[in-house]
Amino acid sequence: MTTRVLIVDDEPSLCELLEGGLRRRSFDVSSATSAAAALQRLDDEPFDVVVTDLSMPEMDGIQLCARIVANRPDLPVIVLTAFGSLDTAVAAIRAGAYDFITKPVQVDALAIALERAAGHRKLRDEVKRLRQEVAGTRRFDDLIGESAAMRSLRDVVSRIADTDASVLITGESGTGKEVIARVLHRAGRRKEGPLVAVNCAAMPEPLLESELFGHTKGAFTDARMSRVGLFAQADGGTLFLDEIGDMPIGLQPKLLRALEERKVRPVGSSTEIPVDVRLVCATNRDLETAIEERRFREDLYFRINVIHVELPPLRARGGDVLLLAQHFVQEYASRFAKKVAGISPQAAERLQSYAWPGNVRELRNCIERAVALTRYEDLTVDDLPEKIRDYRASHVVVAANDPSELVPLDEVEKRYVLRVLEAVGGNKAVAARILKVDRRTLYRKLEAYGVDATAKRSGPVSGPSSS
Image (cartoon, rainbow, N blue to C red; front, top):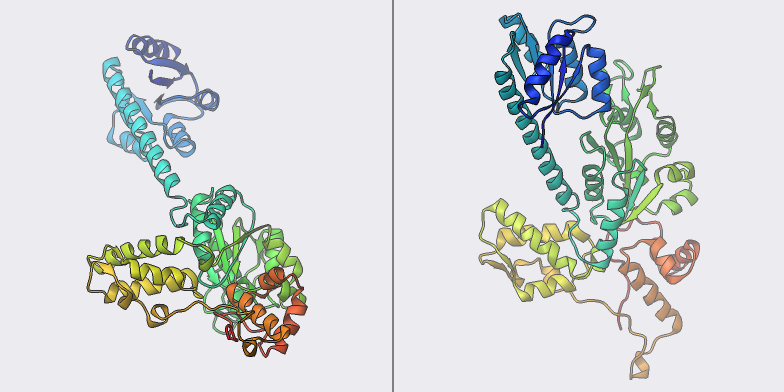
């Protein structure tokens, strides 16, 4: 393609001379007789290279070069000057000039410099294109799985990645909520900005407030120096608040105010700092129940729950278990420098039938252990933890041939309720929806069964599952 060149010089005769010489050498040339006119042309038309004189009134070539480089870093600038001193050359290069040519200008030498500059720009554009292409193919690489649940999840994430809407990620512990947060950041428009994460359950309220909003020197006993908060650190990027359901109730109004006004006030300061962040939150808590129990503010819930992404438990993802397991085998085989290629059919059967109460995190730990222990190229059943080797799925028995084995209706209901609760990882909100009862009714039943209805879920629910 023809290289488009913009010549900038306050001497019209020189512009005409260079235009004619370059056009004879197949360049597409335009000219401007001032820096202001050149900047206007660059706003209106695309050019491949700019050639500017150094000495011009109002704005010289060095200043023009600096302006162009600041706004269009991919556009090469060649500076012309009659003063071929080293200081002038250094100033031009510092301003971002691609090349430096002294007057009187030899058109052949300028043509060579233009071809070189245009080639450099094309190479940079190609590298940029390839990087974007690679980044595009890897945007969702961490979302491994071909189950219907994972295909649906990838579709949702791809549609919301480029927005700035707040996202609430829910799901059982170990399902990969932080992975989703990283994917949303990496695939979105803020990917060049920082991703800052904080666990809201890991700190007491005063420390968490200081972490989020920062503090001034002397704001409290141990504040020996000022500290920039995580909101300010995430400016222009993404702030990930993990375990948002465990945020102290006293801190929630301050978080809501920061989100609504897009400003934070460091502890001990009277000055507010504007911030521009995309908020992504995650929790394994039932926030609707927490709102009813006055442990979580309803207005904050609506503010963070603009888009809701619910992660499926691993047991609901079918063959994804083996896809993930193979991925982890390759990862840890490489890390441990072991020649482990795959998983034996018998071990794969055990992995597939296990309930995975700890979800993907438990599977990762299982495969890491197995790769570290195995003596073979394929993982065997003996390489798996005992609880996975010996696991047997539970069943609810509602009938039998022997009348003595039959149980009352209340017992059947109890077993079924506990089985549903186990199947959803203890998530009482989900269990209530499946059972088509409200949460209060479910809580009353669990209390009658001797199950702590307020306990934080951490695995299978204990209770009879067979007879």
